[in-house]
Length: 447
Ligand code: MV4
View (tube, rainbow, N blue to C red):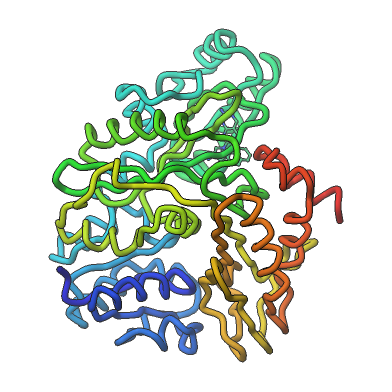
């Protein structure tokens, strides 16, 4: 097992990783920018190193500074959290080249899944269902037209280096395809320095369902069921649940068996998430994330597993120690992302938190680095807390969520808590009847 772990992140996820380390008896090193000297993740770590000025590119994305901090403090592993360097294959490689373990997949798997075309090609070969579309990169507009005619309009042009919704263009007809093709390539070139694009049939009202997996370095791969992440605005998730209100246990077992077999074949290791679009009873793989995700707690609550502890054990070479049949699902969990944002305009609201009261009680979990007197800096992501509830049924979880939202007090800055209160009171949400487009409409109609 590791002797000391450096956590290359900030905010609630740095605390989340520290908690797992502490329970394993492993000392932690925090890194921080000059804007984060008073941050909770620095206070709670065993040691801390200042790695640069406020801008993320100079601190939390500064690979040399972070690796130096690990070497100087004698850390033998780095946990990247999510965001920042968590899916940077070059960083993972650099860390391993210096004899430090990267708590995550191999650099080659991070690189493969970062290329959305390579990821789809691998999954196609391994029998994972995909959205109908091009088999790889489109060589020219003629090829795009031919494939679009075959799969039927509307279609999407997506960037190979994209992901998370960046660089997508929809075409409803052949007349629109030339412009979509041109714009997608131009934007992909400008944003990623890679103008490779591919084509998919556009699904008009899918749900975003993702599958959590863990793999050890001895050929064992298991899944922990799915999360429904359809409630998002501009590709920012606001609320996630486990399981998906749209799936039954048989569908979960089937997609889980297909996905774990594919990752076993690929020799994947550590944690990963396969993203699917789910519509009309069909799964279609779109992308794979090679990191721990923000919404991992809902899976932890229904499976009773500590995913970060598992990531650390697996990175140290330990075997999973259990098989798929040992993983059981109990009840329902919902997570609300509380952002320091105006709940109507979604503009960031950095500033001083005058008072902070987190809800508690049975089945309530709050992951946050906030405290009374803390000043939310303007430089980073606006998420300041995650409220997670767990209950025997989805209806019970919604009742518990409503109660916990009433208790939650963040005074001094505006947050998205009032928006969450409106969502839980909505009848369509209560029925679980929503697609990826639901929240955008809800926000514009109920202002
Ligand atoms: C799609 C799609 C419809 N059809 N692909 C957006 C994020 C990126 N991960 C993939 N995305 C989409 N791909 C096909 N063939 C609709 C989206 C999409 C979406 C997906 C998941 C969650 C939220 C979304 C919001 C808008 C569009």
